[in-house]
Length: 507
Ligand code: SF4
Ligand code: SF4
Image (tube, rainbow, N blue to C red):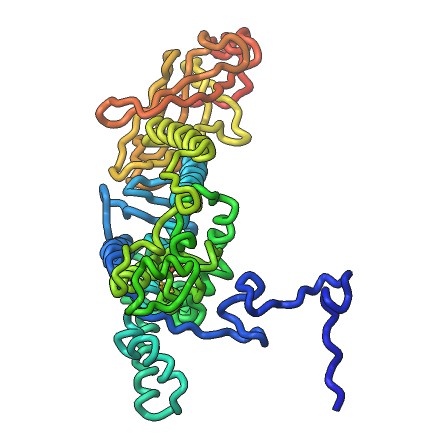
């Protein structure tokens, strides 16, 4: 049987865009895929050491905050809520509404710029130390896996072993725990969107009343289960855009998890009897080729090949190499946080013009954000003339306009609001109850009537400024509107005398 002819590549056809893959060159292929393109499952060795302990402590603190977040209240508001359904947002207990979009946009810009600055200076600290994906994968799911299935070698052996009752029990236990954890993570995400009260209601109430909520709950649980049980490091290498940004933001001054090739090369196994002086005289460096740094890497790369997009700066290779250096009695730090310039030229960390430029941008954005937040009013009032309504002339001759008022209470307390005309004498009456009460974090709408003596009108319209005050007489904001009256004052005066009026009259 004839086999299919080989695909043309750069060797058989110089014009071909196809490149022959060099499987020895790490740049040519993914470490997590074989020659057929199938996924190579990773079994990273259990990390341990100083850096891991530091990360673990920080991770547990951050994860506790992540899971407790929806239940933490500041001034009665969630410390973080991103309710896109009801268009209600809370950051550190401060409520924000769609009308605060400018604040939100500036805050997002500030957040993104800060991450870029941070990446330029310190590489992917975010990924390794604070990203929820890394924290949950490495500090929760991976640790459960080590506890149930054992370290890397035991996991490999279990994967190759036939499906016995014991293997099924181990796998079932692990995946049941993974699924339960994914349910908790999915619910936490849902609570950040709809609020913890609504989430509890969905869980405790009759399921028939919450079909949509339960559907989202199930979808989130399945997505998180698949991410942490199957997709794993691929979320960082294939999906997350941040890793891709990194190549555009880092430079030779950026602190990254790096292998000191000047100290490490050339590699050669360690011989106990050989002194370090002799080893160096023979042209060998400190890397003994133990591959402990590769064995622990959760993304399957070899950091000795240089900074790579897949590296999430988890520091596991630093600890692994330090342990090797301890064993051979060489100084720690063959793999460490370092910039290329510090390794190549021994340069200390320096503040580059690029970092300075980013910092100026951050300071400017922070300034704008501070101004927007501090000048933000407690209420937002919209006063519009009722559509289609004309002015009315009252029996006492005054002119009256009907308005629709919308009051958004951005505070966490109920507000009793009064309106006062600022530059002109007249009356403002609230229709219905006669009062303007706006519940906390809510929008109220009603109608108000403004009546003025026609002597104040110098034309058919008058611009009005109205003060919005709280129950303590504190001015919350000043709003502007337009008052309309008769086209000429003669018409108004005639109307006042009562012998000329074709407009409806009211007492
Ligand atoms: S190279 Fe080192 S720091 Fe980067 S992901 Fe692998 S183990 Fe973590
Ligand atoms: S752990 Fe250190 S000594 Fe061992 S291979 Fe990696 S860089 Fe070399």
